[in-house]
Amino acid sequence: MINILNHFSNELFVGFGWTLLASFLTLVFSLIFGIFIALLEVIPHKVANKIGRGYVEIFRNIPLLIIVMFFYLIVPKYIIQLNGFTAGTIGLFLYTSAFIAEIIRSGIQSVSGGQMEGARSTGMTYKQAMQYIILPQAMKIVIPPLGNQFVNLIKDSSILAFVAGFDLMYQANAIASVTFDTMNSYFIIGILYLIITMPLSYYMRYLEKKLA
Amino acid sequence: MQTWIDALSWLNFGFLLKGLAVTLYISLVSIVLSFILGSVLGIIRYSKIKFISAAVGFVIDLVRNLPLLLIIFFTYFGMPKIGYRPSAITSAIIAMTIFESSMLAEIVRSGIQSVSEGQMEGARSTGMSFVQALWYIILPQAYRHMIPTIIGQFVSLIKDTSLATIIVVPELMQHAQVIYGQNANYIVPMFAALTLLYFIICFTLSMAGSYLHKHMAS
Image 1 (cartoon, rainbow over the protein chains, first blue to last red):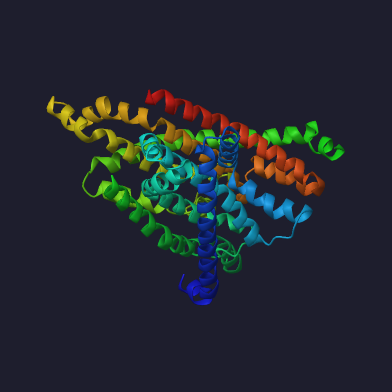
Image 2 (cartoon, rainbow over the protein chains, first blue to last red):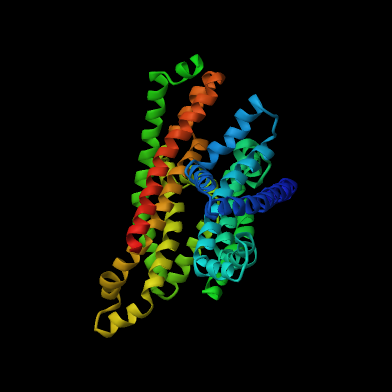
């Protein structure tokens, strides 16, 4: 195990960086896109509701691997060249957005009702009420589930190993295939994942208790 | 159009369905096993038995915070090290069960905790033992509330079985790869078929979950 740490510290460091980068990029973009989809689902417009709902149902009910492989194998063949990291991150982004949209929609719906009528009756437009009254309250409720989704996202980013995305999981396979020391390679990578995910999920549990 | 007809010939489609059967088999066995194991672990964690609950809780947290892909590799390469050589399918079932049990244990624990306050004291004050109160009062209510969440977890289990393709389990994803590996032109029809098959199964289950959610709430 010490051998691996000595010889492959560079690979481990790089893998750690790519995993964090993929998770961070996906989080930022899918948060924005997720809020957008959630709004599509709640605004009073039938067609928009259907589109938002459809997006969530489709992307929540197919495996992440299929979405990622689609961008890795099919998109480069017919549309545009993408490297493994980009293909994987786009796949993660589309998949995670559906889950984030679902969390935010239920957050919005749990504060709506009376709040919306109250805000409208003071003369606010629907957009103003949504922006200043509903969304700020909803965002506060959804912080713990969003945090858990972020933990899931970090774990899911291991899918990049399928498409040569240079992340931790990919490095683990690479190190294992060079050293033949599979168990120790995966053990070290496991600890590196836990360093990111454990504190986050304990913090989310603490927040859940505090907010409840 | 001809490519699509060739790609989804009876032979190929039958091969995909065989893969689907393996996917469903792995999912079903893992669902049953992890439901039992997850419930036991969740109850142990809730029960606050000295040392044991804390130790079980810690292990659950470790497993929950690791990527499933890593656990699949761990079981696949680790089992032979301890002298047991399972087939790829069994190996996948073991990995899925370990991972999903830890997820379900957490769902069960928080489900019990959400109904137990007050209820537990009430039941105990009527003279019931801790186990009796848990079995007759707390668990029936807790499971009723948990059903939608548990079904959601099963949907993600079914989707996650596609990861087992990396250890060459002959499941749906793997069989599709075999087909488009032979003829690269079949790749789009194969992905369409994959998406549709997974979607039909997962969507049906999700709908059942949200139906139950509404039903239980009223």
